Length: 54
Image 1 (spheres, rainbow, N blue to C red):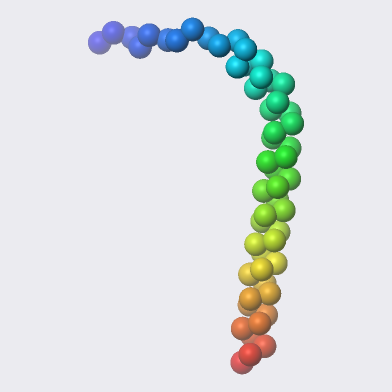
Image 2 (spheres, helix red, strand yellow; image 1 turned 90 degrees about the vertical axis):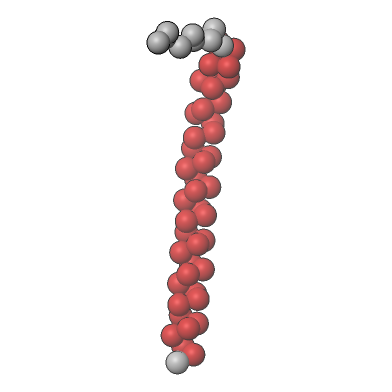
C-alpha cells in the first residue's frame, strides 16, 4: 500500500490556534466547572426535596 499523501500544512490556521488557544482553553475549563457545580447543586436540591417529602 502507498503511504497516505499529507496535505500541505496550513500555517495560518496553526497561527490562529496558537493565538486563540490560550483564550479558549481557560474559558472552556471555567464554563465546564460552572456547569458541573450547577448540575451538582440541582441534583442535591432534588435529593433534599425527595428526602423531605418522606
